Amino acid sequence: MRRFYVNPQSISENLAILSPDESRHIVTVLRLQAGAAIELFDGTGFVYQGIILSTSPGPITVELRSRTNEHHDDARRRLFLFQSLLKGKKMDFLVQKATELGVHSFRPVLSRYSENHGNLPRQADRWQRIMLEACKQCKRASPMIIKPFTPFSDIDVSAFAQPLVLWEKEESTGLDAAMISHEGPLALFIGPEGGFPDNEISALLAMNFKPVSLGARILRAETAALSAIAILQFLTGSLSPVRP
Ligand code: SAH
Image (cartoon, rainbow, N blue to C red):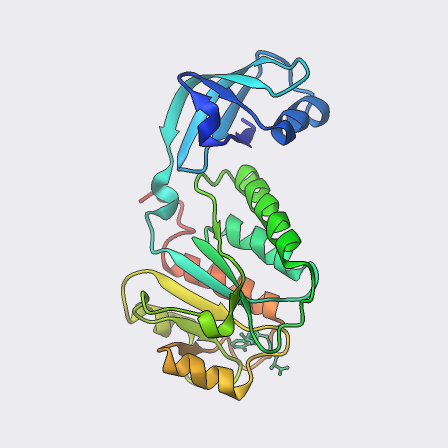
């Protein structure tokens, strides 16, 4: 059953009013009719099963028939991603893949070698749309939190027992060893296309980051990020077919 986003404030009793974007998608793209059964997720972990009441011009009204609680998205160890800003569409790609793979929060970091000089507020709006679309497509009930752009100097990982940073010069510690040595939420930091200069690596070590390697080959940042996210999410059980 197709799933659409509804703002929790647009739900009252057993009725939900959809946004103009979602209404347009339903009527003009999908051509669904009144009476069609759809699902709505409100971003707080609840999923509603409902029936379209009418498709007349304007926001679509949905009669809600039932509600399920899909908070399990977060039942596993949460993964907090810190990603140095990448050029062009690579960040769009990573926002979409991180959402699909269950990353809890995505923090874009402005590190020294970040070369993305695009319009940051416009990128943030686009990423929010990409994330919600990915939630709809993969049936993720709780959206990924996209944090504000963060200068490297403002990074704070004091809440994490053992934050991890992907570093191509690390020669002994792999991902599995690094993340098993502690419990609690995971923080993973990936550098920009140009990597981390020595002073940034030194600063990360001073912040208790543990460098981890993905092997001897130098991966593109988006390859390293996608691979590490998938490996960590597998190791924490987030890709398990068994619900917690
Ligand atoms: N400085 C490198 C390029 C950096 S690759 C060079 O040009 O030689 C971009 C980012 O991907 C790095 O900052 C790192 O976070 C990650 N990365 C790439 N290959 C990696 C590897 N083999 N192990 C760990 N991290 C890697």
